[in-house]
Image 1 (cartoon, one colour):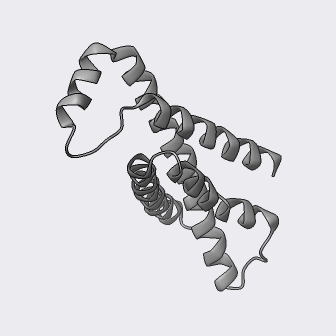
Image 2 (cartoon, rainbow, N blue to C red):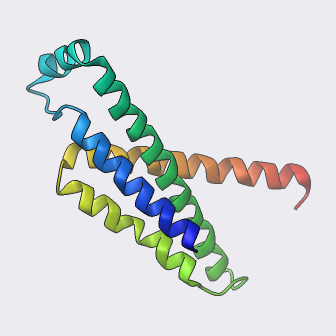
Length: 131
């Protein structure tokens, strides 16, 4: 459980770094974003690296929340504090939205997609193994 709390804190810090380093994204200032990429490639690279790490960590929370809720609905497992930590990742998105709404929405979309894709992949692996 402490590991999940530390992962959530890590995801928030990486998301904050990504939002701080990436340029403010609007459809009006697309040339500014491209010029910022050319002029500051290291800053952009670090921002994108933090964005990818945030997305991958938060996708594990999406996957875990889905699976544990499904087990609870099927009456195979009781809800634990781990589920509360998984659902508290929503507050991480809300806190990041205070800094930049558009980048936080991109984080939410990409982590949801990655989480759902990893759920489907884990189902395929379980079916292959005969579980």
